[in-house]
View 1 (cartoon, rainbow, N blue to C red):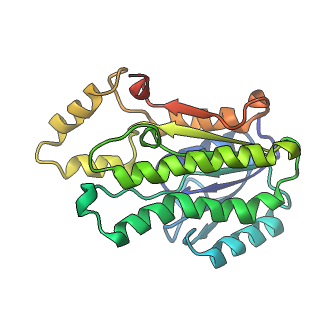
View 2 (spheres, rainbow, N blue to C red; view 1 turned 90 degrees about the vertical axis):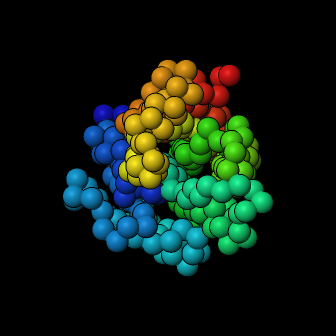
Length: 244
């Protein structure tokens, strides 16, 4: 198993891509500390330590780092899967919504980097940030989300250069539309969910949405020694969307 006895912290682990990453890492033998917004972890993670909290709160992030130190010791892999998406035309976006999107996707990542990466043991440690295809391209009604996810990519690249002398790698996975509960719920709010889903699938060269497991496989690759000479990279997992 590629992560046998590796200590890993995964954010956003209570659903969607984060939950799939946690499941994949567990199968690979990792020791896990998970966090998310939901009060309880899904039943398929009974053996993992889970802390519920808000990563925008520096006190909670500091406590998370302290629990990681107590429970795991050093931390070999950190995967950041948390985030928040809200849709609205730019001129109709409220300051509060803009602040929430930027804090939940970008500034919270800075806080996790600041407090957790001092626990990295040095050579061989890895951080993988889950951004979005919209961090690389624009889309109507998603301007603040694109800004946040693009900022996340820039933050990860800066950290990759800063931590390279310590041989700590930082990379980004940029998923496209993925079959998560949040995306499925957004489809169901449309007047004709099936037709809207087909429209979105038709915008993707491979003609379908990603599964959370496919994104988790990309995260696993960037977390493992097989990618030991890759840092500061952005790996799209978007069915070819950003290849246009």
